[in-house]
Length: 121
Image (cartoon, rainbow, N blue to C red):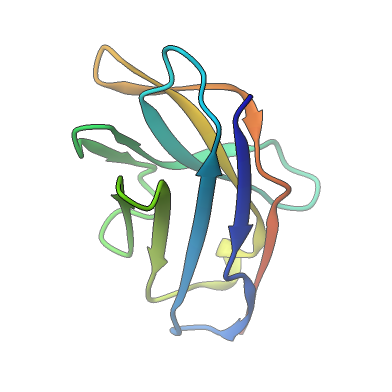
């Protein structure tokens, strides 16, 4: 059973930065990637960024050039560095343990509890 614990959310002004962390424990056969999703009020959950075990990444177009996903395999932790934050980045951010397939991130049912990010304009 995979357990994911996020931290690092908060309130920040537009143009500011935040770094989210997700610590993973446990393990499931086939889990070889990690991802960050977000869900704004009244909207569907969307993929923000994913990273494979080998460090291959992909990003949503809306965050390219501003957000960076990284991982520390020794610490079983994945990070999301968010720079130049905008009000439209306001959402609950969720960590997911998933799979990398055909160059893309595939989510599984393993989710963290979520952390709120609020960007004030």
